[in-house]
Amino acid sequence: MARTERSLQRYVEQWNVVDKVRRAIADGSLEAILTRSPYRPDLERQAGDDGGRKAADAP
Image (cartoon, rainbow, N blue to C red; front, side, top):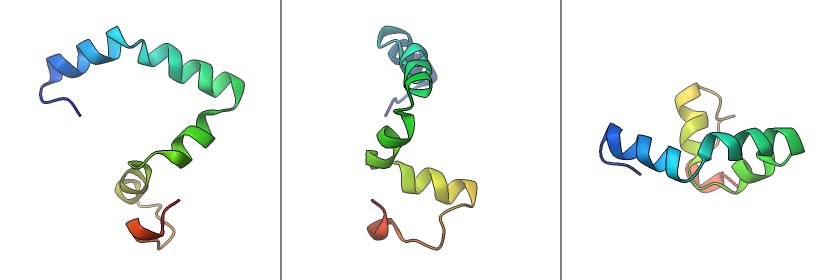
């Protein structure tokens, strides 16, 4: 998403990403948000927990 570390930091600060994630964890909506994310299959694969799915099989 961001080309440089500086632009990523600015994005995180300006869009208040940390607080949004904390609220999603607190209200239980984080899992639903991540399930809809097009990036989640790649993150699971990187973590070694893709359950044998291919990107096309992801929700």
